[in-house]
Amino acid sequence: MKRVIQIQLLPTPEQADLLETTMRHFNQACNWVAERAFERKLANRYALHKLHYYEVRERLGLSSQMACLTFAQVAGAYKRDKSKQVSFRPLASMPYDRHLLRYVGLDKVSLATLAGRIVVPMVMGDYQAEQFGHVKLYAELMRRHDGKWFLMATVEHPDDPMVDPTDFLGVDLGIEHLATDSDGEQYSGKQVEQVRIKCQTHKQLLQSAADQTKNHRARKRIRKKLRRRARQESNFRRNTNHVLSKRIVEKAKGTKRGIVLEDLKGIRDRIRFRTPQRARMDEWGFDQLRQFIAYKAQAAGVKLMLIDPKHTSQRCSQCGHVERANRSSQAEFRCKQCGHTAHADYNAALNIRAKALVSEPIVSAYSVAAG
Image (cartoon, rainbow, N blue to C red; front, side, top):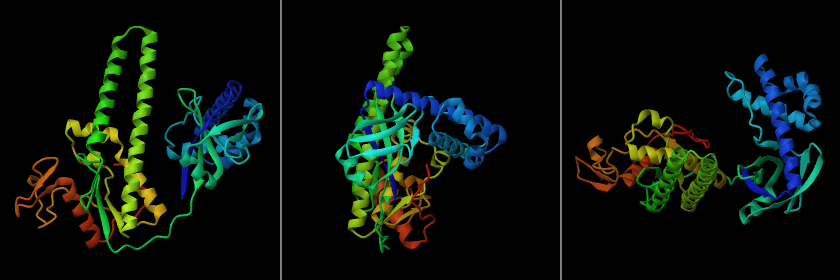
C-alpha cells in the first residue's frame, strides 16, 4: 500500500529562492501546456509531449525531465474534468521523481532546480523516520503559506495477508460521538467537541474583526491568524482521526473480526440535519475518518465492508421494530414496541454488525466515497 509522509526541508534563503523560482516556472509551463491541451481536447501526456516538448524547454528553460513532468501533471488534472481548462497556482506543489530527487542519508536531500542541483537539510519525526525505509523516489515539493518547505514523500508497504473473518465489528460514525462500535465502546466525543467549539468561536471572532476593520495591515494580520488557526484545527482533526481509526482497526485485528461501516455516499443529499449537526458534519471530516479506517484496515489485513444505512438508526437491535419515533433524542434510543433502551449510536452499531452477518456485502472496498 502506498502512503505519503511529510518531511520538512530547511533550505537557506538562497536555496529557498531557487526552489521558489523553479516552482513558479514549472507551474507557468503547466498553465501554458494546459491552454494547448484544452484547445485540442487532449489529455494524453505522450501526445502533449510530442507536440510541445521543445517549446516548453525553449520558452521557460525547464530541464528535460521537468518538461516531461509538466505533460504528466496537465494530463492528470485535465482527465479529471474535461469540461474546463485547468489552471495551476504559481506556487502549487511540484512533482519530483527519481531523476530530480536523491536522498542523502536521513538528513539531506538533493533537489534539481533551474540553476542546478542543491543539497537541502531535512528533518523528520519518529514516525517519518520509521517509514523512511520504505520511501520511493517520488515526492511533491510544497511551500506553505508561512514560507516553510516540505516534501510529501511516497512510501510503499506490503499489506498483511487478508484474514477471512467469522464476525464483524460494527462501527457507527455519528454526531453525538465520532464513533461507537458494536461492543459498546465510544470513541472521542466530549473533548473533541470542546476543541471544535473553541476553534469555531475563535474563527468567528477573528472573521468579525476582519470584516469590521478598515485598516489594511490589521486585516492582513487577522487573515494570517485565520490561516494559522485553520492549520491548527486541520492538524488536530487529522491527528484525532488517525488515533481513532488506529484503535478501531487494532481492536478488529486483535479479535480476528472484520469491520463494517455504513455506505454514507450522498448522505448530505438524503438527510436534513439540524443547524448544530450541520456544523459538526461539515467541519469534522467524517470522510477522512472513513478513509483512514479503510487504508489502515487494508494494511492490517482486516476485511472492510460497507452496508446500506437504511433504518440502522431507527431499528431496535433487540426486536427489530422500525419506527422513527424510536429515536427519542439524538443520544437516546427507546423502542416503542418492546421498550428496549440504549444509547442511539450503540444501537445503530449493533444493527450495522447484524446487517453484515446476515446479508452479502453491498460493497467491499478500500476507497470509501465521501458522504
